Amino acid sequence: MSAGRAINTLSQSWGTPPKYVKAVKEVFGGNINLDPCSNEFSVVHAQTEYRLPEHDGLKEHWNFPTIYVNPPYGIDKDRGTTIKSWLAKCAYANEEYNSEVLALVPIAANTAHWKKYVFTKAKAICFLYDTRLKFLENGKDAGKGAPMACAMIYWGENPNRFYEVFIEHGAVVDISNLIGEHIGEDRHRLKLFH
Image (cartoon, rainbow, N blue to C red; front, side, top):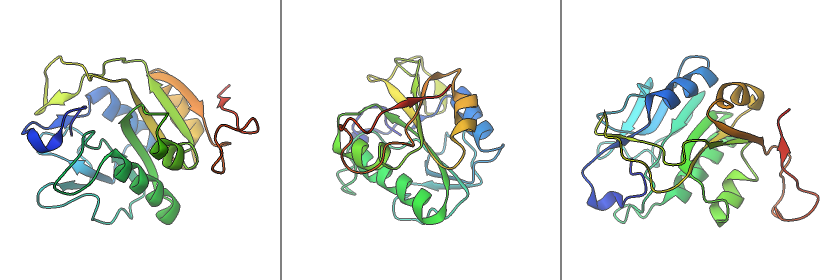
């Protein structure tokens, strides 16, 4: 995983901080069935892990009940993929298999891929309080912060559970009422959890 760094030039593996892994497992009732972008240093410990170069998580199937995604944030020039590819697959897994999916991604609310796969497909977002989230580097807490703010996005049928767990980690917003392609219209409003 690359926290805002070009993945085709790095040998380091960027991992999810343990407090977020714990929260993800709590939302999922204790188990993460799939981590499609794992690495040898991951602390996620999903039941099924896809790791490059043996398994390209975007080309493998995602027919699992619970999926946690901390995708590469940069451009993979060799595979022609970006964060957009991962968000599309998250939305697809939820729609096609009824998978519950959580993704830790950089906030890019002004992009077409957020409008297409997050605002019109996901149920909730947690804008994390950690303004410079500290990813693990090769499995160790290196103390360096991400160069951008991050969010945890939820696709699934239990946004209230997501809220209960993630409210301690950030501002949680219910976006389940955002439908259609015209996000900016007055009839589409963000609803805060109460």
